[in-house]
Image (cartoon, rainbow, N blue to C red; front, side, top):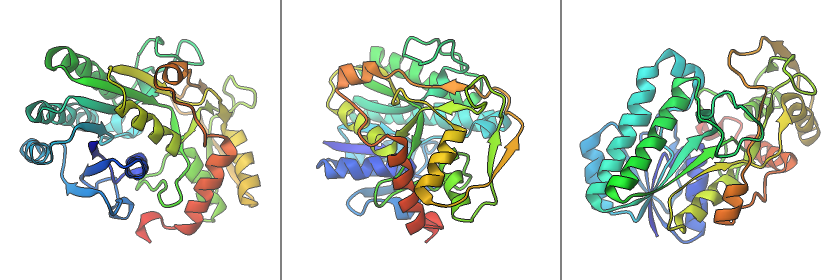
Length: 323
């Protein structure tokens, strides 16, 4: 299948492109490189540098390349930034997404797999969270993703589009060649590994008195390759669907740090910080719907596998793609 991947030079997008090409799909990458990296691009993918907000350029690109499906990763994804600049999040994640959908409609492309988030649920009423959990986002990032999910449903009804939305939990890990390099790194596992490498003085632990066994937040970590496999399975599905993507297992911040000490065989200093406002104590996915309807299952997502792969990549790329 010929697939357009927006954000295909970013962390999750580049690994998904790698897996798509390994599965014999033809890939066109659209990325403005504001968060992505040229070094993450797959050599067998066609690369188009462009912005979702450049509607005319996007229209021309989709018309020219005529993809059979789109996997849509591109967007803004930092919660604190969304609280400081909500306008940018609605422009990029909503208006930019609508530009993409309109380009698809004009080119006769009807299948889209959308990179959504568990942040659409906000502070969950129950854990593990299934797809029936009420969606009550508590920041513009989560709200912008929920808005686009709702827009997808209307484009399905009006234009015959077949959307799949995958609500990610915590993507982590690396393939042998591609890993996590954000210009502003907020994720726990890379920051833990940066500390093990001596690039950070300590790991900041935000909140140590949460309602969890050790007082630190619990999250569901999924290997980026398992996340990519969910997108590839969705390409083969003829029906629309909205799914959680997680393992159903939760690990606390302290558990991640202790596991990382064993994997890296290095000391990892910790500094306690005040809890962040609105940070849920526990976020764990119920992903039985994805397993049942798409036949998906995580195969790389034990915490030790995630940490070992990420550690190998960061050791080989201590400055990320800047190397």
